[in-house]
Amino acid sequence: MSPELRPATRRPRGPRPGGSDTRAAILAAAREEFATRGYDGATIRGIAAGADVDPALVHHYFGSKEKLFAAALELPFNPGEIFARVLVGGIDGVGERLLRAVFAAWKEVGARAAAMAVLRTATSSDQGAAMLREFLERNILQRIAAELTPDRARLRAGLVASQMAGLLMARYVIRLPALATATDEEIIAAVAPNLQRYLTGDIAGTE
Amino acid sequence: MSPELRPATRRPRGPRPGGSDTRAAILAAAREEFATRGYDGATIRGIAAGADVDPALVHHYFGSKEKLFAAALELPFNPGEIFARVLVGGIDGVGERLLRAVFAAWKEVGARAAAMAVLRTATSSDQGAAMLREFLERNILQRIAAELTPDRARLRAGLVASQMAGLLMARYVIRLPALATATDEEIIAAVAPNLQRYLTGDIAGTE
Image 1 (cartoon, one colour):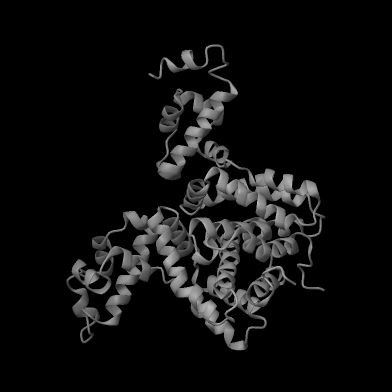
Image 2 (image 1 turned 90 degrees about the vertical axis):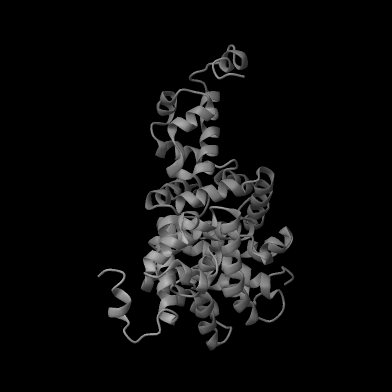
């Protein structure tokens, strides 16, 4: 199907250009472009071509490559939302439920390529690191901290993030054999109590 | 100083080409090249130029770009050696001593650029991930596991690596504010007991 036919045939009465499906199409194209080419290699023009829209529309929606990247960083599954969901059952046992939810989400969407792209960008420059930092702060850490008692809530959230990030990287990205071959239950038995301690335990060494 | 003059003026009676200083010069040039250009962009020719040697000498010492990379991955500080040192005091308190040693080494050498380069390479391709995996297995995890009782030693070592990697990434690479602004003592009080549990505690959930 040629690009000029597609809008008419696919969305005859839709709100394009300007609807939420256009925005979603741009984000999907941006994720593919960033994953394939990395942050520096990705272009607004290429993303626009992937979404089958005019580059001006990408600028209209997202303003800049940086802002588009931040939006695209919202992974297929959102760790902050996962955390909010697992908190419904109360703070007890959150460590275990968090691991189960993240393992399930990870397998479902095949998130390794997205995680590698995020890490590659974050380690390519100070700007890339800053973008990931802002994403984590805004979308994950603030949500976790909001659910905790005020005592060192930000530090606790950061510690949970450090263990989760290291675990996902070691198990799924680097694929360390001992972690890649361990069962989910083995990992959960080992890691959940440590996460729970970060969330609700004594982390000041005063007990 | 021109390249053709340098060997004669700098090492009039040294063992070049063929001594350990040649090897060290190639490794230093390789680290710079891999950090600047990434694994795919780095070339044996460029590394040889940086070390002021013939490319054939690089092949002679390291055989291939892959092998040179593995050698170059031996960071300014070697986590496996650090772990061996902190174990001298016995397994009790290793979590805390490991954190203190790694924090000190990290600050001393300014390892952020090296860590970013390693992560960038590891997330650039399956080959990059495999190279980091092999490095971690051979240089760090096997050393840690060798010091532990045989019960789940490899899994315990992998769990320690996951927490240390996630902590260093979150605190020094991504620089999450809550972790970047916390003092070493705050981090140690929070993280050391979790590392210690991975090393010597009940990680099977049977207690």
